Image (cartoon, rainbow, N blue to C red; front, side, top):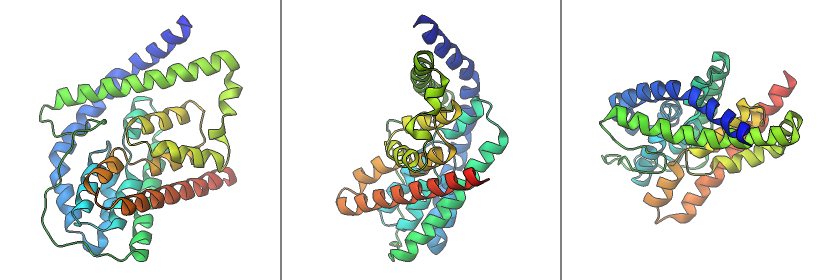
Length: 283
């Protein structure tokens, strides 16, 4: 047991410098480009899903939270909101980078999330016709479990992100190492998350967790071989960070509408994940 804990702690410590530098760079970009991105999506009109899919892919969950506020104020369409949710990468990119994942994997994952987000957003807007209200409101940057707050002290914010995510990675790695030690690597590959359709359905439910822990678990499981690529994509597509949490809070007067958006997000994300998984198996 001590060896399992030490191995998990060592793996986590190795990631710390890479995580911190990644978050520091991302915090800087978010503070520099954050307001410009929100203004762009406010003025996008019928092209909202296109810009939402592009901008939503920015790491961390701040933009999905901002999009939820914009939708609650009826500034953007439901399709634009869904596009942002589908393309949101949350903590996926920092974990990929800190784990030295192949560049081809990172590019492929981001590309698929952006394309699926844009396509899904336009599909939703074509089925649900509702023009946004032409008003000017300012997105509120909320404090939440993922710490997507407007903190001018970039180093402190990056350090907080690093410690928080490192803890999640340690817990997930500890569990995976325990499974391997007790049952062998074959058991990890035999998990339900590696099975077609069933894996995507379950991963989609994990993605619905309104917390950055979901993307940490999904990405780490995939890198450790405990999840298929299609399942990971399904979970990451459904996962919108704290976006859904902010939506239910700020759009609380319309619970049925919030539930419908959640169901649409789940169906689109899982459906796309199943298609991606099938394509991977064929190729």
